Amino acid sequence: MPELPEVETVMRGLTPVWEGQVFTRVVAHRPDLRRPLPEALGQRLTGATVVRLGRRAKYGLIETDRGDTLVLHLGMSGRMRVDPDVIGKHDHVVFETGNGRVVAFNDARRFGSLDLVETHVADQHPLLASIGPEPLGPDFGLALLQRSFAGRLAPAKALLLDQRLIAGLGNIYVCEALFRAGIHPETPGGTVPAAQLQRLATAIPAVLHEAIAAGGSTLRDHAAPDGTLGYFQKDFAVYGREGAACAQCAAPVARIVQSGRSSFFCPACQPRP
Image (cartoon, rainbow, N blue to C red; front, side):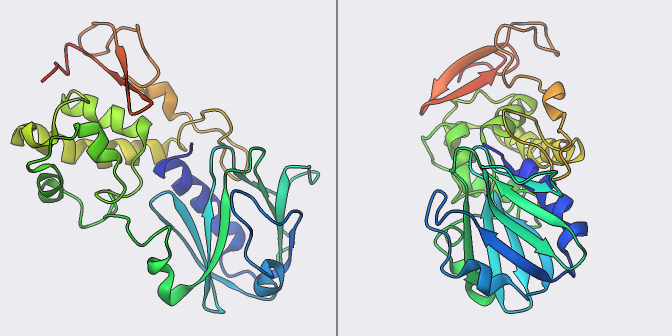
């Protein structure tokens, strides 16, 4: 599933296409994706001007001059296709703008979603209301990690994936950040030493910035709006590299399963607690 860097890449790719443009036609080819589409979606968006595009956690936000914000979630296979040659059967919602551009929300598995909410209460939407601080925002740092981990018996990886504590972190980049910080993914949060927490506070935004610069990671269906593929997966230190030599110490990368998800780590660089 696309994580924060992939969603950031998509929104940055859509910005020069949509920002300042009027939706001249919006057509939904089916009534639902993961959830029912907003009632009268096409009517509510047609004629509206896009004033701002952004991201909150793993959600894309498209704000219009009508006081509405379109909340986009890509799900497992969602893509925003810019100026496709043809509209295919999985192009479920098609947006046309005054600059002659066409963007299709393509989602073969239909796990994505589109919601239209009033901008002034968007942060109260059920999808966004309980999300924690952004890891690339001013509120993130050592103090936040200390508060989130203090006295907790839950594994460090589980705490980092808890969207109520930190927004937008997913399996890939948590594995990579824990490796850089030298923290075993099963380490109880309350036992992580201060020095390792400091390294983690540095590693999380660093790995996210590097992934965004690389256009995200191309895993399964993800691609940027212009169709280009991200290449950060070429720089994975541990994720998906079970049995391969650790770049730091040459020990084989290991894999365990935590809460149904694979965790990749180096047993030598990230010793068990």
